[in-house]
Length: 110
Image (tube, rainbow, N blue to C red; front, side, top):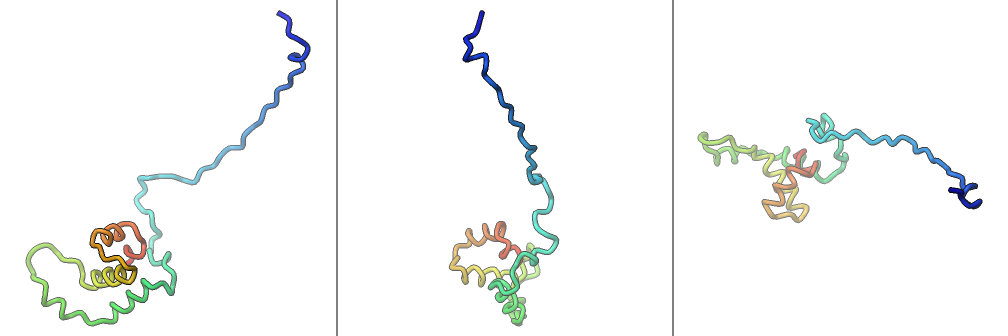
């Protein structure tokens, strides 16, 4: 079978693609944060102010409220820091605070 003249002069151009380099991806890696979490928190961030404020308080009166039986409680300083910081950010729901404690680096740092 003969092709018409128009089809014979058809030229084909090949394009070569450059190799794509993706960033490393490993969903099973054990550490997602830097060795020190506070490296990612700015020096004058409000979370540092809350931390310094609570660290300066004497919380010995809280010890009397705890009993020596049962499961080990969370440290009162940590709880106070988290609650104060959440209230500063207009977050009053315990469920939202819990979610932030798992996801937000500021809450994780406290």
